[in-house]
Image 1: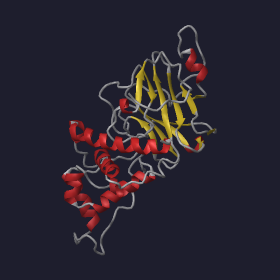
Image 2 (image 1 turned 180 degrees about the vertical axis):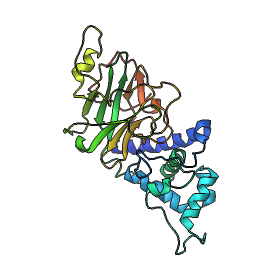
Image 3 (image 1 turned 45 degrees about the vertical axis):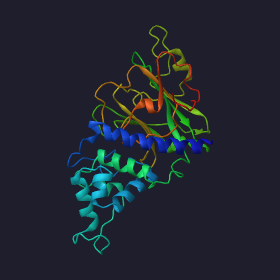
Image 4 (image 1 turned 90 degrees about the horizontal axis):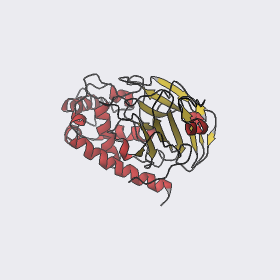
Length: 310
């Protein structure tokens, strides 16, 4: 099986798992606030890549109110408002005053539509054939390792080209979402290199090795290519997003607008084993994507990951 086929298979599996998780998780059943936004920098930005955004809009433009309510699982007020906007003043679908959704910003402006609604729409679109992921998987760039160890400077990530073509890293950036922020608290570039298929690039908070405190660890300092102090100053409840130049999410650790109730990613190492990108808005469990290990055993940092989770 090719890496492309593997990615598509994993994406289908993730969609099914996401729907099951959302159905059984009380937190995921919570409604959005009336004026909630799922965008990174306000209601004008898109948190999804184009193929996924198109699928979400197709669902919003196709299903009737009962389908949005019962099948997708939207809050009834969100479903009702989507239909009211879409069908126009005469409330008749297919008439001259219809106003179909042309962008995520237009959908996001609807009352009671926020990150929970977007996650349900995306899960439904993935599970029901509304999204063609051939374009989405053409350039595959993911966060392949995460290190959050003791001290101030044992913080680092690794970026992996899981696609079949070289990737221009100038077209991507890393976004740190701190604490209760719902957009990028800090953003940093990934350098000017072209990353070959199967290769990795490494970022850390500090490259200089200090023997007295082992902070950062010598292996981390030696393997780190780019020092990005502000973006790599994350804690265990901060989220990391790998962003494209168009503002869409290529991959993530955690969800944009949801701060974990505890320091979920504190004092651990995450090694990527599922190369399916995370979208930054759907239900997220790091163990669906990574093997979990000690942040003090980082011999694999700077080396390409191996697919296949336990």
